[in-house]
Length: 253
Image (cartoon, rainbow, N blue to C red; front, side):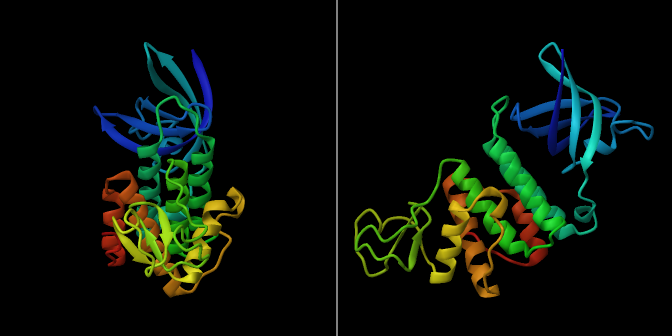
């Protein structure tokens, strides 16, 4: 049986002398692990379409419960990423996060759309890295079931609270005392950063990265969204650590 699908290559793993195992994110089938035979050869016809972070149309053959790449035609290769190590490492972090929350054979078109939009914003639109990073992190946390409560302080009702509890996923005022809210990691959040977080959570997918913030605000926002994501998922990302080693930043706790 053959299936044809568009997919982004999330990860590639060396396999034997001439093959690779690819982790793909598709719209219809969710995450798929496929074998690309002979892809490492110089004359391979599928080589271009099977590159890391390449968006391609794949024809896959299902044989004894495993998929093999029959054809791979690149749709968008994002060459700008391959000329900039920072952009490549940040996009790789996005891909690893998407791989972590996606499931085999479970469709997740919103996740694929988010990932493609984030990579496009980095490579084609050349938006600030921290802006794209923050938008991706908070939105993927929402897709993972960890949408934060950002409306108002649940204790006093103030609409501009000054703390974000990344453990509980809720905003509140530093002066308000509540047993449950007092637990976990609480970080300061400015009014502008809170407005940006609200925008990210509720904005239409195509407008996700259409907001502006000062450099200081982007630094604060990126730190909050990063810490929130790794706290909720209870794990770190080696791709994120590498990206931060390039930018000389240490953001999450």
